Image (cartoon, rainbow, N blue to C red; front, side, top):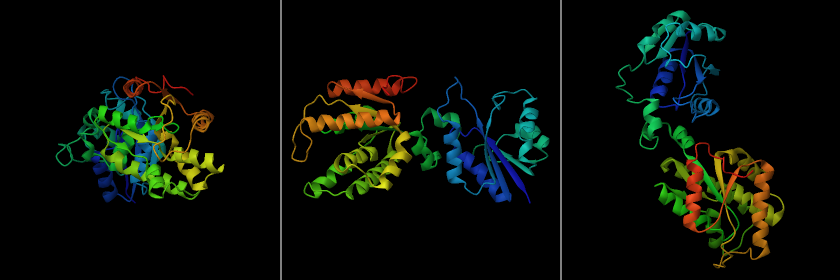
Length: 332
């Protein structure tokens, strides 16, 4: 049985990495991929190792072993010849390998220490002209060199939430224009209008699933950010507010996706306006606003609460998103 090995940071996983793994899978019975918990220049980790492992797990479920390991020497940036010994020794517990796949001839000594034949794939970068540095400089421009699944996870989803008449749609459109990206319209409102302002308990799951499907379609066209006028969590709040409970599948959808968002709560100072479709007037609107804020707090979700004019809110959100560590301005 022939065993193959591929190692890397995968920041992010791109078509060049996929070529390596695909070549290894074609040439070996079992393949192991090692992902190093490394940092890019400047000490910034834009893609946690859990995310990078998730990409490979999603695309390559047939791997024999998928292992995340600490990077002891920040290799290959470290050019010390002894680096090969350190890395080879670290991998001893994985067993022996017959082949090691890379795109760099300089890993020859590392392969020999493993007792593996070194297979160099696309050294000249002719088949896949790509590098992690190139993609990190502008993922949107180079998204064709990424799996759609990988690219989608590099786009930050901004959930704009709040009670009725709090300016969510207007703010989403304004932010999308500021960042030259796209935003996701609220499906629940469209369905509510189409059904003559009538709804049922069962509608909430359908609304949440359709809203999420819209996000999944839009995120592949987004640049840096995807602004979401509500999301599945918002629909959960409506179900809880109207019926005191929600479909178990709606709860599961929220629990599975809630950590993907940057949360922005739109202040309720615009004043409630009846546009023919709204139903939460006066204290009902205030109560729904408090319900949402209380739920975020109970879940330990950090959020930014914005207020003022649309222009002022755009500036507040922009400053928050561009902060070195997003969340430093948020409430909990």
